[in-house]
Image (cartoon, rainbow, N blue to C red; front, side):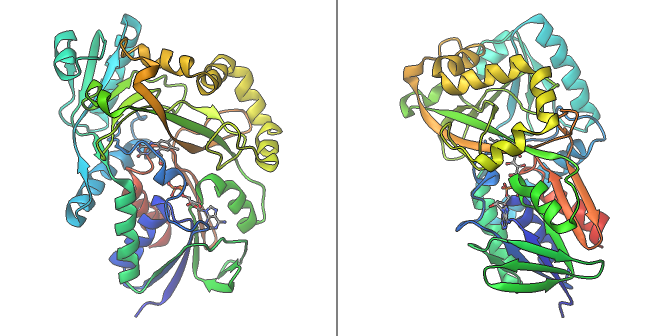
Length: 398
Ligand SMILES: Cc1cc2nc3c(=O)[nH]c(=O)nc-3n(C[C@H](O)[C@H](O)[C@H](O)COP(=O)(O)OP(=O)(O)OC[C@H]3O[C@@H](n4cnc5c(N)ncnc54)[C@H](O)[C@@H]3O)c2cc1C
């Protein structure tokens, strides 16, 4: 008999992963997932790079490092058990000069500390053997990483939730919430429903849902950073064999413009990280006054721009000018030309920022009474989703 009713706001991969674990692994929970869009995974989870990250560069012992290492294993296990396409094709992180080589050595150390298996440095000849079109002076091979069909994962998660007498409601926006120490009430266009627990997995809206639920000030602000991709025309797909990443700048949680083999067979280059004038705005012309004011009048955002002006302008120009975008890609692939590429997709990252202008690097989860809030779940949130679900259930619910 199911005794406890749990509401999850948001049908992205995190809401679905938590709903799946609760409904399938624990008999006492009945789950209702509320998703405002007509389809699950319409935002971050359905618009990402489709990469399985294994925790290479995250600060040792951080939640990101622990949950990515566990998460990739859980995700691959789920894909195998449920016939979802994935390919552990490995990734290389490529240094193009001496300074980057030093950072690469430090990254390899971090990877070892995080428990990654099979890390190996490649010399120029080995890079060429693996990726003939890539220029690099040294690279790090990360054999555990790969690519996956996250939309396929989400479909299976939803199916498994529904098989257990739980539900995934699409086209059902949570408009308001009332919550006390004992119960939570969710209000949608269909009326009111009472729950024992409410879990906020609303991604780009998580700070607003937090303040709606707790009736208190947001502890941080979601600042939307759009990531835009270009796709290789089919005849140039052989320019990239696997996953090719630049050495990341550890000041930012973004991984830099990289080359990705997609599970569908296509090849992409991107994403950049451009400030978006709309939280769910997928092109330069998408503007929301409310969302823009929310970011532009935030003290933390002013500080961020002041401290990172060159970064912000560089990313902005890569959005406006294709030549600027391609210049970034040329660093690792000197032969790349605009004529080989066509417009690709875009996603918007829900990146939490504090009022000092710091980007919150780690996952951030908070509990208040009978509410749990996922306030920051950037990349590798999709890879780590099942591990994040287990973490939340064990730490805050069970
Ligand atoms: C460009 C980009 C590339 C990335 N690449 C990778 C990658 O390769 N690998 C990786 O592991 N991670 C990657 N990530 C990160 C990963 O996609 C996210 O960590 C993950 O998708 C977060 O999932 P979520 O469920 O929290 O958010 P979302 O997928 O955004 O889901 C939140 C859901 O809540 C719904 N919602 C919001 N408000 C309400 C409301 N009031 N009522 C009802 N529903 C509501 C929204 O419609 C949405 O569907 C990338 C992200 C981006 C943007």
